Image (cartoon, rainbow, N blue to C red; front, side, top):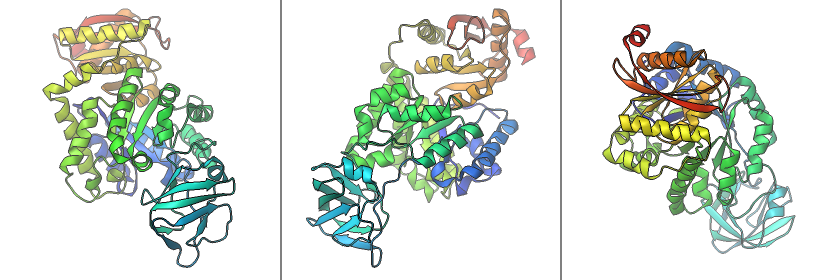
Length: 480
């Protein structure tokens, strides 16, 4: 299978349209790097067989496959209505949400979340049914919230509640999430994403359960998270810009600027960042996207995001392969544009004052100065590859690792091509085998030079301290 011709990665969501190994194989060939399993629609009991199916692709294509388990998070909903199961709320009407479990009327409804009633204050906004209705709290007590309807409409039983102004004093993790996170870590997924993160402590809760068996991703979909974004990024291994719920809880016109700010913050800190939701939404039912959707995907690529994600397009859409193929084509085209490099370069952050970061920057500068095609990074934990990818070099980063789990985790990271191999025995072996893999993986040919980055002594996580220029000789081509 030929190598990817782009740096940004593609995540596709599993679902009815992509439930078989055959279809997942076609999606992988079309360009998918990481498969997302949405735990909102997945039973814990079926998770191991889905993971096993995706691991089967590795044997078939001889390439690491990334798996992301996406936790559901707390689903806040109103209670049940009497009669036909719904009421019409008029603009300006008074409407109460309370702790009384009896069926709702046009005057009131049960809110089965005491933590919300406790946290609400006068002036707070409640958004119902994905933004269709809007209420403003006039008076709040621990047992009821009296609101004024500012945007009316029909409200039915069990519709969702969003709280853009309210910080709820409970963890983002429900009991279902805790159970699902344990099951996902046990099944061997590579990344676990936590929904509706509000504070860095939420990520600490996830890490306690996962215990290093997978990397932790924070989904940013609440305005409250933006207030502590710096801390949340520090507490996470990666960030997802979850534009769906973010666009419900904050004015839509603020989402693009927020997306750009988040991508740049993550790049500065060297944390992978995923842009998600409605990227090629029309391709759920159409074989071609809208022009606006193409521009949307292109913007994420230009910004230097690590990955772009498909949700319903690949999970339940009529054209999953076409959606992946289109996303792949957009990414390749953007990355070949002359302005692409200048945009990435303008946003490069200064390295941290560590030896490893200095080596990563030096590798980038040497590769650019000599126009080298590849930077081969020997890495045990993946940290060397993460650091070099943060630099957004013009060269592909070939991550050579003895750890299959590391290779799989790096499938999410910008510009990284992972290869599983035994650790180098000495410095000459390190350079020679790096050259061999650069040829075998089709990133270099006879007479080319590559950069080799490693840590000595070998196998010591985080000890990146060496950079070397290596020459592709006849012996490397023969071995490849």
